[in-house]
Amino acid sequence: MGRVRRMRQAAIVNAAVFALLVAVALAAHVLGAPYVVTLATKAAIFAMAGVGLNLALGYGGMVSFGHAAFFGIGGYVTGIFASHAAAGTPVLTLPFTVAGSAEMLGIWPMVMVVTALAAMVIGALSLRTTGVYFIMVTLAFAQMVYYFAISWRAYGGEDGLSFYVRNSFPGLNTFAPIQFFAIAAALLALAMGFVALVTRSRFGLALQAARANPQRVMASGIRPFALRLTAFVLSAVIVGLAGSLYADLNRFVSPAMLSWHMSGEIMVFVILGGVGRLAGPVAGAGVFILLEQVLGGVSDYWQALLGLLLLAIVLYAPGGILGLLPGGRRHV
Amino acid sequence: MSDVILDIRGLEKSFGALKATDGVTLDLRRGEIHALIGPNGAGKSTLIKQITGEIRQDRGSITFEGQAIDGLDAAARARLGLARSFQVSSVVPEFTALENTMLAVLGAGGGVFRFLRPALHDPALTDPARFHLDQAGLAGRAAVPAGVLSHGERRRLEIAMALAMRPRAFLLDEPMAGMGAEGARDLTAILSDLRAEAPILLVEHDMDAVFALADRISVLVYGRIIATGSVEEIRANAEVRRSYLGEEA
Image (cartoon, rainbow over all chains, first blue to last red):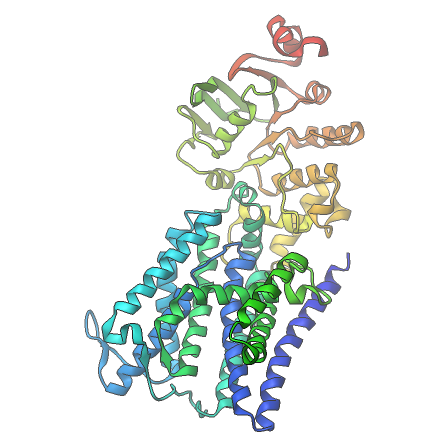
């Protein structure tokens, strides 16, 4: 059935999309355009958020409209640790003392733990519903986190929280745009590799079966709920790490990272690029940033054009941009 | 009574004013095919769903291999070895026949929460899956997506998946539905061999298949069992002839 060939083609497309992103950043660096390197970094970070959401949305069939919560929580954890490190005060004193940190390698594990805990709670409650109710419940949870951040004066409330020094990474100067890009691209590659493995594993087999036919999965002795919750948490952790990088990119976090616009944008990366395709969100985020730059210069209403493009994709190319390329059909 | 694998006693289920299951007592014994027949709307599917745990009975008990299973959900019952097939083919259409069967192997064997090793290169899944596909006569179709299999092949795939569950009992809901005469004959032969693996509770409209296969037949009408007996006894039963078999027999 050409299945093996199709999978090989898909792997080539995935690698090519990632390589293109890296090539753009390298070319911009060589040509002395640090602004473009930063744009590529932003694209890599958004792509990583999309790769994370795709695990829940594309492979698990969970249309979460609340993943900004995890993006923002990742960002806030980063900002909070960095600001405490700068002030020399502990993040927590009760029940135990947690010191601030200005090192990515110290902050990322915290981001992973906090987003995983948040996703367990939000997922366990949201996954009792399905379909449009699931969409609404995840949105509601994200809005709760959003309003909580707005009212949390200690960390800037509505104004957000700035930290003036980008967190450090051993052996690298994170302020050099190309070096920070390298960190973002490496994490993106790790996330893509992780999702690729997970979706081909036993767990991935059962998860994708539960998307297509939960009744059958149940009759096979496997509870879809446990599969979905696990995928939801893994997805949130990836998105949370992307949020951490985004906070470092801007050296600033604000409630905007938690807003439903952000949830929508992450979903747009996935749908634009290709639902359930590994590199789909990478292509989607890249095109999104490109449009924002090119069309945004022409008109403030560039998102109206984005809307038209999205409409065209959904109507005529439901496989997204990558669905138009060889190996485009979704596979297991 | 150790020969009784599945023991259903006094089962009742109502949907509003409708009594879909009205005091059903039924058992399934080692090595037999027990056919459940009855007109449309008699409550056969409702009864099957109560046995699998998809819906809960209002009253009565279900015992499986000496263990009360009333408190278990469908996944837990499946892991005990209650393997079912569905009235309308229920497979994962974008999965290949092999992957569908691997899913059943995975459910029976456990170890779902492994994240890194590719399932398609895991002989603990693929070997049993290929074996059961072969048993169901689908050896040559392993790599074909279930969605493009013929109707008859999908019914066989369901059998392969039921076999992969390491079943202690089969619940087959109209496995012959929509099959041509030739396909039905082939499947009859497969089902006949299956009873050696585990007893079968067979819901079926195809009377040729039922009379060819069944060791015992129970007739369900308006949620009640009106007769249970051998093929000859059921054929001769006046009430059954009147209420169900009618012109057919």
